[in-house]
Image (cartoon, rainbow, N blue to C red):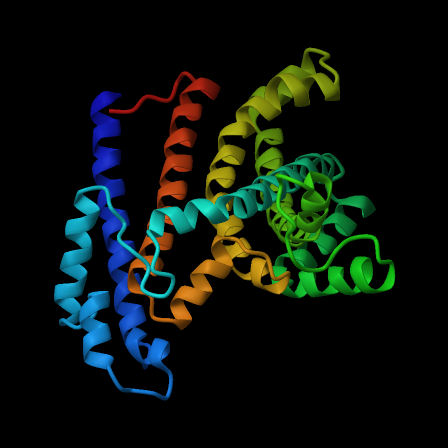
Length: 312
């Protein structure tokens, strides 16, 4: 087990390195440079400003310098904001983390019962309706659903705010209200995907021999489902959970900008537009780190759910 996790951590470090390298190369491919973005049309003093910001060297030299800072546990300073990257990301966590956590909760509260219900009603009208609704949900982008939610709950009904974030310190109720629509926009689209996954996993277990054996012994449908099917389907469902965390993070990247929220997603898009290399790489590293930690936690949970699973 220990050897397995050492290998996983080594693979995770390599994955993170490849991710930030690809992000850096993609940013270099975008026309423009941070000095020109800061100066605008006035190009005077560009060389001096570039030297002060640390972006006057070659792209390879800047990347190696950033890696050297990273090896010391320093994400560097933002070119655009002039502040430590770690501090900027930490400032935005109170917005992004509740959105992702709330969307994840909505996803599985909706998807698990609907997926199980669809599997139990296989071939019936209710199953067909749930499949059709989930199919529509899988093709609707979260940002487009966010716009529809703004029109319905913000403009027409005026139940919820459509933009801005007042902060948790002084207005916790208003802060939560401002995040509900983004949570719904991401959670509903992901719930459609997870519902289909849960249905397929439960159906696969319902066709196994042990289910027929349990039924032949007189076990009720509910007992078969709760005692046999769901525990065995949990491993597959847990795999979906690990995959969906990445989707939830990606969804927040766009949806935060739709609702004008000061989260990590809006910070990332601002950094991309400003060619803020350290900030972009810091955000990418944060997202990759969250996904890696979640997947490691999923691996640990596998053995808890199914003791037969062993890691070499």
